[in-house]
Length: 222
Image (cartoon, rainbow, N blue to C red; front, side, top):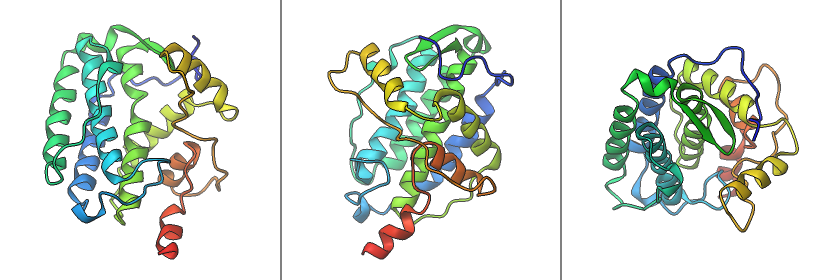
């Protein structure tokens, strides 16, 4: 199918340095997750902290599968021991980076239900998932990480390329059908309105259907 973004003017020729920086932010946030918060809710609908950790690490494993020429959708998201999440992240991050070490992988044609292009374009399409879910995790556990502006900008560009401005359910219906799902999986809701001069991380999560104020409202609810 046609990507939701078409062909971008400024495709990343080599997104691997951005991936490395995204992984560094994720490592800090995951290391800061207290075990007693593993069952807390997150801004990612239907996922508690433990499930979100497994999903984030699963995203790394899917990135590694893509770079290795394997099926990313065969990756299973498996919880690990409560004190093993930082180790699991580190191991999956190493595998993801190693799978894309060969420059030739960046030029290989690849296709996912939401994007078609070369390896570099497909890899860049994962930045928004990584950073938004890292924000989900940080917000759910009360962390305020120092966001890497370059990574957030790349994630926002990627999100705008693969997510339509509205009527996203139609896109997800196509994606779900392509993956053989009986039900429509909707990972990102409609974009949330936000000021154009809001912080870049807030604009990213809002574009991906998150309420940037979720954390403060969750604290008030307690």
